[in-house]
Image 1 (cartoon, one colour):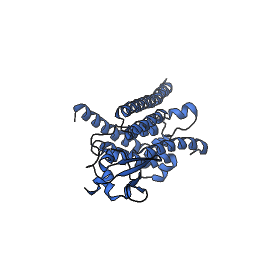
Image 2 (cartoon, rainbow over the protein chains, first blue to last red):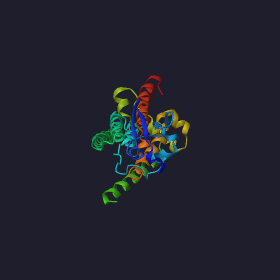
Image 3 (cartoon, one colour):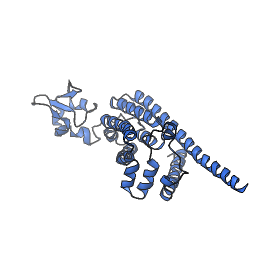
Image 4 (cartoon, one colour):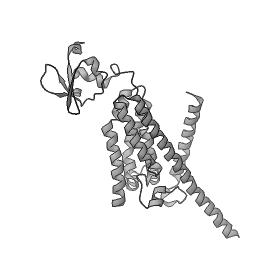
Length: 153
Length: 126
């Protein structure tokens, strides 16, 4: 491949890093918006504008296959927030974000820890919501029974 | 797929079916048997999810405006939730896609939206 001899510099959080070869870039977390400077060429460009870097974003072939992101439980956290009326869901979203933050840094064991915390808050919120919901239902049911008993007594 | 997983999925589908039936046929807005928001009853303040049951009722009747009136945040969240679910199913096959959908800026933005929505709806009364 022609881009194998090229060297790339990245601008990550305002710091210039590199040089990296194309092979090294495959194992880094860069997005189409990451600023890239190709050694020997003029000026910084967004990675998405460089034809030779497209494989990094749009196909799996060059992607670091060894890294599978840890489940963040974000969907579940959002659903618990919207349907269970308790702040538990919001705490779960915070842990989901932490898990994802570790995912982007490829720190799987930390991500796993936060993912587990998110899961627990979700389960807590879900079952508390469920039980309290059923209790309100049960309350009305009992209330109805008492009302009927009152009517017939 | 393990048996436990199959039973879980079956149970989930059944539950969903029952819920759809209930929320299609009964309007939570004028039916006291639906569970009330615990947070609202305890504190007197609305939670981010208040109105979700009514919103689901309206959505099942394709009344987007009605759903928007009771909980606009839920309606706005639907595309995101769908996208996240798709990404979730493809997590192992398409890790890159998962990472893009769960991009940090995006999900932190969503989290801030939840908080802002929570505060604003109690100030504005929506």
